[in-house]
Image 1 (cartoon, helix red, strand yellow):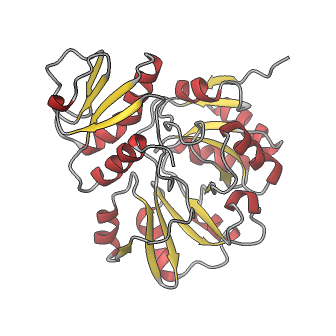
Image 2 (cartoon, rainbow, N blue to C red):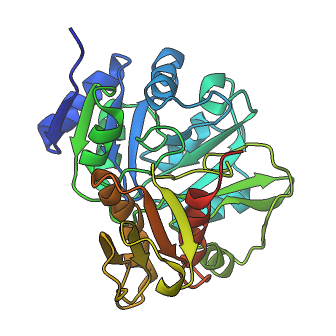
Length: 322
């Protein structure tokens, strides 16, 4: 008989149930402030392997480890340089992932064989309570099929992963709607590997640091593939509705609803609010998928602040394979 995922609302009882599953080597989908994660014990190789199998994720793509207390960083990382501690003091809990030298206790499968580990402390109370209840850090990439749209609702997890997770915790729509920003610290310098829910210019300004864009194409963090965050439909970037001729398609505008009668049309934020746009992008992608739409026209947003991360997701969604 085929396994059926439990799909339950978040409560103190369901969090305890989820923690028990994780302790037994199971896999649980749960909300964070960014997107829904698919979690397993970060120190359990077999449990981590289940994540890759459920997501159909290649083993060269490392996982992000989630902690509930800053002190847990010391059980994952070999060292915590003062410059890194300053970032954790400023931005944790929050949507910032830091890549540091790993301890041997972190399984190679979690780090894709790299000598570094990606760690973050979410600000979502549900996530923090689950990690605390489990009693160990949780390795958790986004709870979607590999390279597909990240889930911002529990129903998105269920639609993509079917009966893969042992439990899906429904905590409503996520707050940010975009994955975390990823920064690597190496030889005294900070490198930005992925724009995310914490704007890179905000990090530079508040922490008084310079973020460097690495030149190498090697996959050292999640979300670095050319094509990623993709719906099944063809995604076409346009500057306006004049460039969009297929009315059977969907049209996702930044601020102004198009006049043409597309099959599906939405505005990311009528106020031009980038936070609102970020929260809506993946949600709209999921809606078009439910309608089985084959083509999506989408406008970029202003390329500043959070807009850099939004445009990154749009560009990767529109990229061709290879």
